[in-house]
Amino acid sequence: MIRFGQGWDNHRITAGRPLILGGVTVPCEFGLEGHSDADVLSHAITDAILGAIAAGDIGMHFPDTDPKWKGAGSLQFLKHACDLAAAAGYRIGNVDSTVLLERPKLKDFRLAIRESLARTMGLEVSQVSVKFKTSERVGPVGEGRSAESQAVVCLVRSS
Ligand code: C5P
Ligand code: MG
Image 1 (cartoon, rainbow, N blue to C red):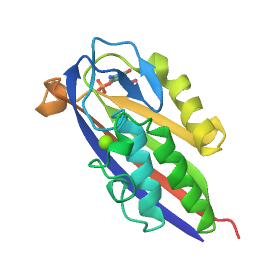
Image 2 (tube, protein in one colour):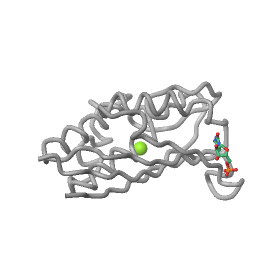
Image 3 (cartoon, rainbow, N blue to C red):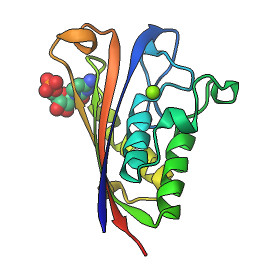
């Protein structure tokens, strides 16, 4: 009746790109490198949903070699994973996620990001949790070279 999925993603930090998290553009002098819009949070949540229904991973559905997905908004990947879960007979119970980024401070964007994700997934904001952590100046995240996201979802049998 219940299934769980986890997802993880990381992207390299680079100048001259937007910083998009959960579909929200965070004002910043750097962004994330990637074939799509490099929305590391949406990618982790998408993989968590795909994992919960054992439907492979995001790269299987949206190959980063396909020019069709160049610069693509990642909320459409997330929506697709939700549609697959619904087709498999599951609704999303809740999502919990963490973004690891040394800076900028993201907490002022938490509600906007939760609302954006909830809207995309057809959920209440209360079903979507987004947490932020630095990496305490250690490792690639801590040195400001990358951003990571982790996500866990719970799916509930709907039929
Ligand atoms: O990583 P650390 O535990 O020091 O983070 C403390 C708090 O700072 C987090 O709980 C989060 O609310 C906030 N934070 C943030 N943006 C980040 C990293 C952390 O708002 N990029
Ligand atoms: Mg990614």
